[in-house]
Length: 283
Ligand SMILES: [Zn+2]
Image (cartoon, rainbow, N blue to C red; front, side, top):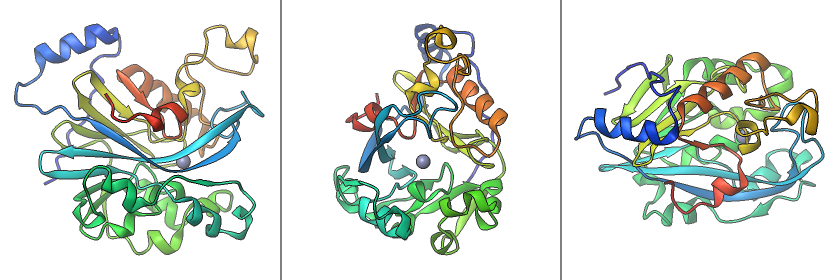
């Protein structure tokens, strides 16, 4: 069922509008376009630093924990499964004092798109941090895709990142591993975007407004849209045209992956962006 077609970045030097026109003229008429529904489970009043390397530290932000639903023909596809506020608090005693805010349960979120957990056919795991995988086991009929490189690291993580990988959940999931870029369904592709984690993958979704990319790496729009004069205005350590994710296993890869995403995407959907998480539908 799985085709391992490479995802090629075709539109790097085109403007958004040119890219859409090109897509429409070159696109196979039968190729489907999709709509993405963000589903928000919980929020944490926090600060920007963990998302943006060496910049914006101490600035307040409310971090959303969100996953995404795509109905592709008959198939219900999820990108990640997020984490509920209560589960995050109970994950480790150290999180008890964090002011997580509950928005809804996983089941309530799926009900918004007319689904129960058993109706989910495919889950694409961008990576295996606990805030992206906590509800995956509830979807008993789902085929769960992850990059082999990510799975390998998750089962034997460096001590610095051990806390982020919920071994009791990861060991129980029957993963379908991927080795690099792949087409999951027509109009839904994954591509390697390492650096935030060793086997992080982004998800590219064809929409009527062009290619939407769910970034995989934990970021906000601050990472993808820094002001051109950020070095003089905000910090000489900041970078342009992207800022690397603050949490990373390889800083250079993390920067390069963010840059690749920015260049190929018509619509960027960062994993923890407060505005993107509240959208009803994308596009
Ligand atoms: Zn995350």
